[in-house]
Length: 146
Image 1: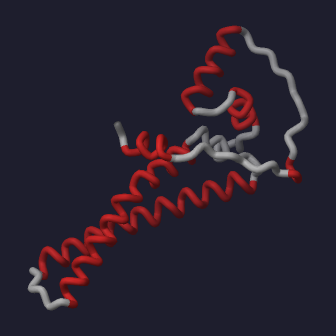
Image 2 (image 1 turned 90 degrees about the horizontal axis):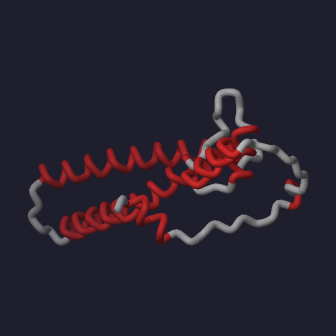
């Protein structure tokens, strides 16, 4: 089982609060043939959204498809949630190294330096990923499509 699947199992279901300024009370009826309806249900099931949410997202997507996110945002968030224990482990390891340095424990400078370089590189990747997700979420929220 992938780390994202484990993180998804641990996460509580999202409950969205009502947005009084953006009530969804307008109804539009659309008809599809049985094959099209089956395709929509399958796609919505794969993405973990309702058929109406899928149709709305695709219909209201920007020309370049920027707002059609189709669950990519949720998948990225789950991926980051799965990385959280690893990042926390890096922090614990760094704290142990610093504690040993303060206790004058003889440490080999090469492996310590390599550990810090690897941790710095990983945290930079995580930081860029978080910034990308945040930008996408803000763009979608601003467009009223989340």
